[in-house]
Image: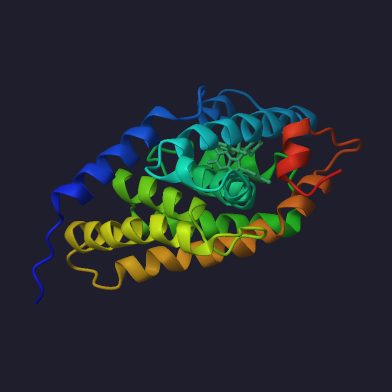
Length: 233
Ligand SMILES: N#Cc1ccccc1NC(=O)[C@H](C1CCCCC1)n1c(-c2ccc(Cl)cc2)nc2cc(F)c(F)cc21
């Protein structure tokens, strides 16, 4: 049985990523808001566009803290952010949903989201993804590293220098693999399952534009930033 050892550099890299991840949280807690009041479909849609807009800004700040990211070609930096913003939003939403809450609150939160205005056909795939994330019981390190790995995906559209992105993603994958072995010694396949969630995440983001335009109300207004990031309007 190979003894897994995290090197000094890998510990330092993890620390930087986790600190950046903690620093760049969503200002107000959307789950708390949703638990406090029942909102109309219009208010929920507005809340979603506000959350998503602030989430994009949060992800930009987080990404800038990833060692080496700012040395990438500038157009590639934009391509990576654009290509991962929706995945990062669903990953963040899943992590919010997976937080243990006082008894019954998770049920109320799920209910509020089901009734928020999302079209019926997207609710099942979305909650299937959220529940598969819950089932992993990810640590904070794993959540932060997985978010960084998602952003540093070399094969996003319009990325020119794949190699340079791979060179940043690989050390993250190496340390995530070791963290998974050390934190889930009973589950040798845990790392593979974790990466498998990224595939499921991509299928979910395939629907995201339709999820928004089919929100059960008329006249969907998006912020300019969201028009940039989402394929809407
Ligand atoms: N965006 C965003 C975002 C950014 C950071 C943190 C949470 C976010 N998610 C959100 O605000 C939305 C709210 C917005 C109001 C109406 C109900 C959904 N959301 C989504 C959800 C994101 C997208 C799309 Cl198309 C459908 C749903 N899945 C959630 C799961 C949770 F547990 C949770 F609390 C909130 C959640």
